[in-house]
Length: 210
Image (cartoon, rainbow, N blue to C red; front, side, top):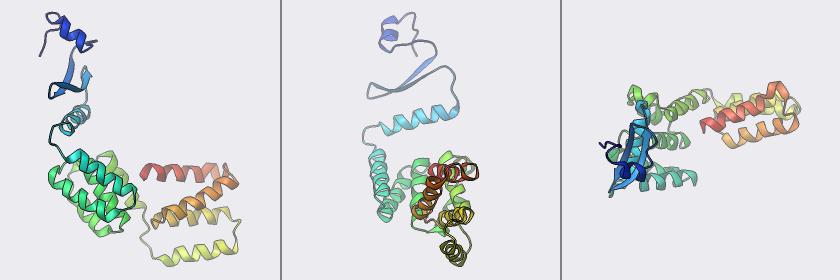
């Protein structure tokens, strides 16, 4: 805690514009800072950043490795690292959301539901967890016969935009993301303004969820 009037040199070094200003240091180096009153979420984010910067903390490196495996579609390998990370940092939403996304991609939906039921209210209100919840709610709970029926109808009436849009939604709900996107892109390419830009809106909705 420093009086800036009595320590103007330090205030100048740290570029203090107003008070209060709070800096976080690790090994004598400033890592992050904020000015004035802040919400609890801002303070938590700053503390998380400081923890990640601590010498010997292996969590950030492992998390980066798991995220890269996920991007490379190596979901089972990523899952193992996320599970290891949870034992190291059990309250980290980035780790929890990463594990949940792996389980979704591996279609281990019962494991996802069981894990979600173990989370406390604050974690369930995390923006990333909310997206996963919404994604799960959108998943098709029906059998594949309905999807096949719509596909057959579309093959017989390929210019039917309503049918193609319904087919794209069922594909997305069945976690056939690439196929669903391709159908939406066909719709968008043919008529971007169709049905109040329905194809574009559905694409953007799933971009956010994914």
